[in-house]
Image (cartoon, rainbow, N blue to C red; front, side, top):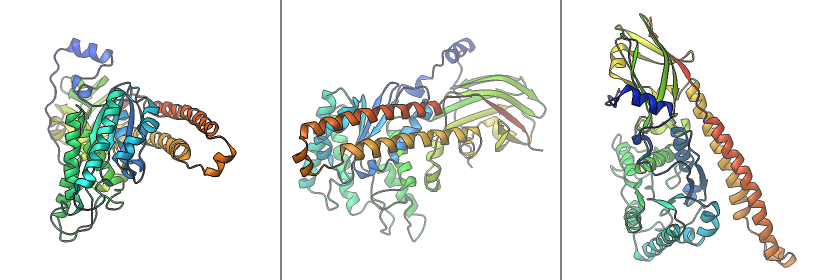
Length: 430
């Protein structure tokens, strides 16, 4: 693994740092620029790619693990086969129902009708997006406008920017126009995604799809790439936690987004108790994308720097579980151990519990409310037997009841995010 050397933030003063840590404050770089905010109710609208609950789940998981104390909820209202005019027409029913403060919009894959670019398909697309923009502004919803991702087709060649992807690129330009026109946040996932595809295509004579799934609907590897591109566009903070220790002086020289207590330095290494204010995250089933893009590292900076250790190799243990091994030289420069701590140990275990809780909550909302009630068709003969108004009122009541269950599942997600201190030991391997 290549060790990245990132500059450590300078501590302004010990007293100021201690006060900030005591109050549980995060640095301005952690939250101020990020699109989502504490207290947000987020709705993610789109087509079948959104309804897959992969990239949307990952965006949620990364957000809540990076800000475990935030009160924030996510609802997915993607519908397979939908286009932007459909999103516009169902806006009140599907978006405003949740009283959102923030929204992501991701349409375009179906809107171009899988053929060459044409104003006949582009104009309805733009009209649909603008209709959603007007409704979002009317409801004071902060909106991120997300481009479609390119197709990962089986065509050979050095670039994926052929055929329908050329249409999707022009539709992506339309997303930027809508965002700028309506003072929204523009998120280009098309070109970062395309860059990874092109890089993979350049590595061999025969190209095998690296995003899994099918050309239109990526599997976890491709959707993790989507989520990472979206989060970067939303200015997601990469820092999880960082600590700088001087072993010779038995002193913590800096700590960011964590607190360190009980530092003990010996001839064999150091040990300390560390309480992080965030968790790293990466979906394990998406790991096959990592040879082609460093998104795990890019979005999870979990840094430990220990100066003053005797030369040699050192094992890093968390609560007695060995998670990594580094040289004294590497530790002095600072190491990012996010990939290792997401494989095993207590931090990996907690990250997996968050993922399971988010998936459980969103599966219930999709199966029992969105598909189960909102989108379930009622045969016309039923309305002949029971007045439409009566049936619609019953549906509304049932939706409200089941939304209470979703709130309970939100609480389950929050319970997995309780941060606990861990015992760290960095000791000589021999």
